Image 1 (tube, one colour):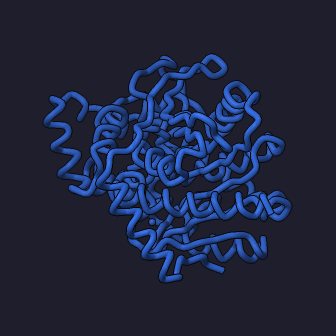
Image 2 (cartoon, one colour):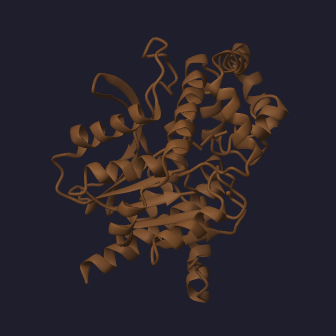
Length: 353
């Protein structure tokens, strides 16, 4: 969670808290021909005009939520992205557009529905939503928006979105055919001082409210000044969309309160129950995970545990230094989109055999 948002506010909070859910066997593409092909794709997609994702508001079970999507004319599958925490879909706009191009228009791509009340406007009038309520919301989205489509649904979850995606898979096994977890947050990392720090803040209503007010106070700055602060604190590598998402959404009090409240319920859920290894064993041919080298949300210890508990499941390691918050840079969005596209093409080829 809090993927890649490190540095947005005070330095101490930045490095401890806001680093998706926004703020890094072992499948590696070693074949020389494939590496060269990937490099060519990088150059082409970063330099040529591509189809842009459309933004819309969607009413799901009475909750207005934000969606970014690209609809193909004759799709063979539908890719549904489930964001991490803070769950702002604008962070994933570049990723969605790159993935659509890499799949060559064969798939409709939805940058999932954003988390309830993690939005630009306080449409829920101060109400806060737990992890389970966000899961139910995404399940309702499939039932409402995708129930009547006949093509397969592929879930792509980022950070806590990986956990949410697995829960969605359990509820819609007849609709969901494949699930990819990116930098997955599936259980607590007891060795992480950052998680310990976040947990203490999120658990305290006083601290969570104070921190949310502190961050929201930056929203009083003129737009240009706020963008300057974000750029200076987060670095020049952030994409235009990521900077805009931080300025427009994370500077809202209701969004930050919901980010921290959701984090509190994530920690509580993970402290009470381990990952559902039984379900993963049953569906291991339909599950795959991408880990980062230095990611406290999805450490390599978790990769080892998944490989031990679910022998033969697909796991990969990203070694290009894109970090947990890949979606905050164009280069990270493109690299991960290539990985996801390769996974989808491989799975589709296996299914068609």
